[in-house]
Figure 1 (spheres, rainbow, N blue to C red):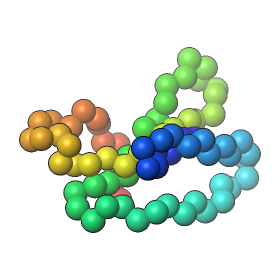
Figure 2: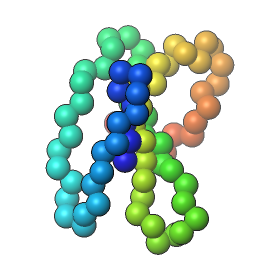
Figure 3: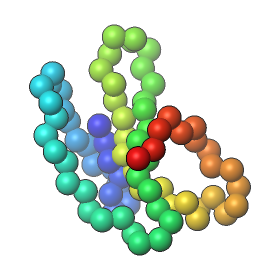
Figure 4: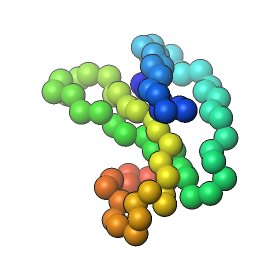
Length: 74
């Protein structure tokens, strides 16, 4: 799994069947931002799920539709 923090991607490797450890994230900027998890495609249907976590500025869309499909939010 990768996360995008302070303008760069950081690798976060968790290759285990046991529960993942808790991850601590820095606070989000105070206005119109959210974290997005992007599921990465893989040709092998039996492969582990890989994803990227990034901070997304909702105001970056400039009134356009957002270029993602929401599976869920919390």
